[in-house]
Image (cartoon, rainbow, N blue to C red; front, side, top):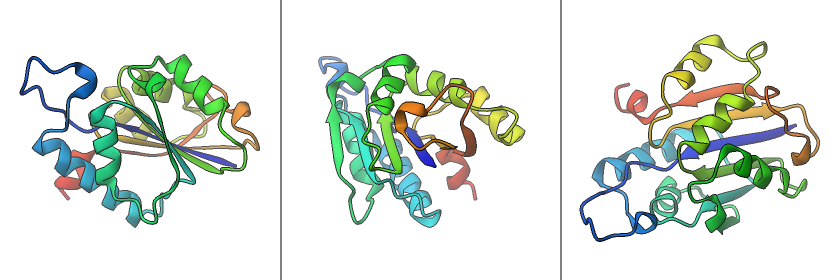
Amino acid sequence: MKTLLLLRHAKSSWSTSAQRDFDRPLNERGRRAAGLMGAYMQAKGLRPDIIYCSGAARTRETLSRLNITPAPPAMFKDQLYLASARRLLDEIHAASDAHGSLLLVGHNPGMEELSAALVDPARSNSAMIQKLSEKYPTAALAHFEFDAGQWSDIALRRGVLKRFQRPRDLAHG
């Protein structure tokens, strides 16, 4: 069994037009949302064995504000910056099989496209699939489980979508 957590970075700031996109930090709303998602993950026992995080400032700050303790090993990978769904899946396939769970912190549209492609509609909750298909907002988390012994066995339309959590749903009860 492999558990995959896909977290889109929290809301970022556009305050300085001179900033490179890669260097944009979170805004206040994003900082709050990342904290909410971290508390949610803690409450649900979602603690990954390893983390893959895009090297962009907003993904790194999102990860930091999750406040996962004790902190699992994190690998910051610039190749995850604005990566396609195919590239993200390649990174997942390359993960060490010693890890049973992986948190990937990245960007859209890759995160949304990958989540939609992984879901097995026959084995996943239709209401969660509907919520996922509507929008993958900033700081949203998709939680998948796979009947796989190796990360390289993760395949499209084989993931059971256990949860799709948006920060706005946590903020409103």
